[in-house]
Length: 364
Image (cartoon, rainbow, N blue to C red; front, top):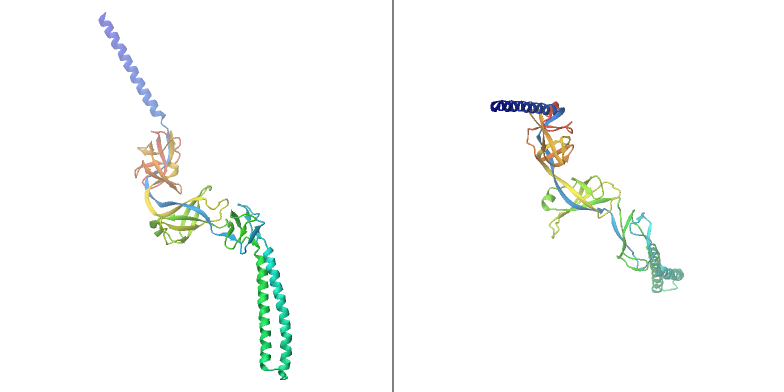
């Protein structure tokens, strides 16, 4: 009986082992059959060139900015413009009370009329004494005296006329106008305040002509030249623009040891002065690993590429850098000479077979 149980036990174990072996073989076959074959383009990992960039902060400034002041002393009136208001060239910004100016004009006109009368009287004397002198009825000394009085009367009239014209011209300065199309960015006085020459009342800027001003270190300054271009990204703008250097200030700021650089910008709408900008200067090139941007895939939130070894694809995590013209820099994760999949890779899984449809570079 004991021998019978031993034989039975061995038979059961043999059956179990046979079933287990068959299960493992079937699982292996099924696992092999689960891998798909993908036809895709391969490329060889190679070195590429990317520009070296120096990014510095900058500020949008206006090329045309004016502090508008009165040329007259007087009280401000009709100061109706507001900050942010657009103004046209020749548009009146404010007025100066012209009461005193009109009084000066009246006085100058009175002096002018008196000078006219004095000249008429002097001319009569001159004409009369000229006739008498020719008849030898007066001495030469008397004649010269009358002739001098006539000459002085002429000069007095000329001076009175100049004074009247000047007084009238002052009236033109009572209406202060915008010198160019622009926008009012600051009001520095209010109606009723006393204006004086050189004291700004409003500040206007032309936003149709703007630049970016930045400060750069001495080593970067030495590599820049007028006419060089740089990439400028302005806050609030979706796309960067190209700026052109037109001013390089050789004298360094004694506090920061930096140099002022100004770049002209193309016409941009919706940009105000004082807006923050990032200016990217190119300083030569450097060698780095570059691959097509289409080779990148994301698996479980991890960015990587599929490397092909022995005809099979294996996901490899990478660290990317800058992107340029459809290429992306690989800072870590790939070695030169490796084959990677550059298209038809979104459904790829580890171990899938890859059939090269064509090769993006030689040696792939």
